[in-house]
Length: 336
Image (cartoon, rainbow, N blue to C red; front, side):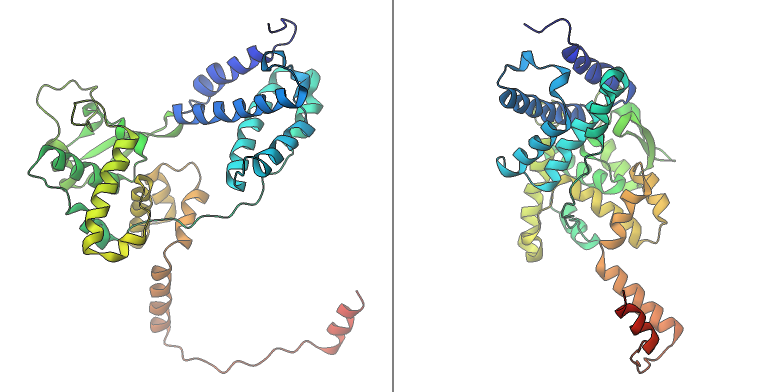
């Protein structure tokens, strides 16, 4: 039985129920991910300490154990540096909560908070060019109910750049399908944003909404009338990407996930010449640094911009001359 003198269990409950859910407004996905990471951490602590998880105390949580846990993730569980960093973020978030509630062990917690993230390889962002999106949108058979839903879903994801969770939570009360057409999306931390809709998107959505439907009912539903799941969205996209790939072989080598539709929207907005701060607000990014990743994504766009720049200024290549440092500079550097 848990000793009453140690508040570890109580602080864990406060962290998830009061801080993450109520104060931070974290999404269920974030809460599940943090819960899984801390579960792995506590199981590791128990094995290292040769005790049951119920017998762990706040004194077990110190920097050496956290470092050993991170090594265990990479060496024994074969996690990538990115996964290791995610686990560390969850542990640091909980330890930061402990610091606010257990000042007696402040030094112990501060040392954990100084553990740096490991440099991880940044994955190339997968996205579809506009011509590939048009091909994808042509695949659903809009003569059938499922085809109309699939078309509306794919068009909505591309139009809004919504995260899958945001799209699946959209209800009829969030939509305005008459001018000015828009949708209210609820992002991370329950932050709301308004996103405009194309007339084509509004028309496709209106076909999904039956008269008399309650305003709280979500619009994207499966064949049984239940809310569509994340796996359902992935299946819909995978099915139509496979059909499009028969016509465009280049798509066969691509791994297109539902989140790639969000990336595709972002790149298209960038290609259209929108400022990165506008794209940030459109996508609901907390920081413009996140949006700036797309600046390095589209090589063709940058190459075209450079070609247009060269044509505009009308310069001709000059013969390059090799720079030679003065002897005194070399002497100085040699003396270091």
